[in-house]
Image (cartoon, rainbow, N blue to C red; front, side, top):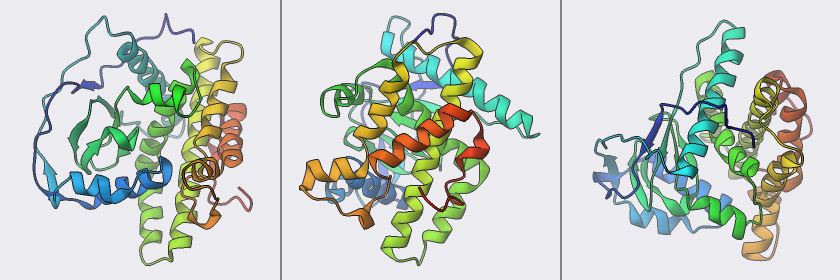
Length: 282
């Protein structure tokens, strides 16, 4: 990616190397994240929930900026800044104000407003504190475990989580979570799939607009993001982890669906093309 002229974001918190500071018990956010991790990465949610004691409440953590010589931290900071510019323009065009999220770098575990964040969960967004959390070791997993290398694949991961922030600001996440309450497991999963595919589409919208503004994407790099979207499709992950595919248990969408909706956003650059909830077919 061509990011030499891209500014870095001031919204990056570096907690790497800090110990976990928490008290209390597991909040509902931890349960949600644990369940998401179980489907997204094939992790047993009981393991995650067992690591965060009952009704955990996070104590405040001091925010530090990453060191200037940390190339990967600078990379994600530039990607975050690019998403800020993109979504500020999108919101402004509709007469709204974009509220920038924070991005937290951590190692091992960290307190969040959604409970204890664990590296094993992979990158995630916590709507309660409006922060994206990532242990940068995930990028090694993305390359080695998921066979999805490349800078644009790494950028897609950040853009997807920022897409969840956009959904939060637009009130979409709240509507989905309310609709999931009391719904059957299959219905709740189906709504989750539409939410995740929309975040993929929003990531594509960012890619389109960021490239149009600064020509940051080099030839062949779009394929990297498509490969990453495919690598973390529910069908592929289920086949790898349990040897069979159970569509009614999907929470993020199949590899084909994830690629399709990312590409839809990437091709159009239009947030209106990302309404997965009105789509008859995903």
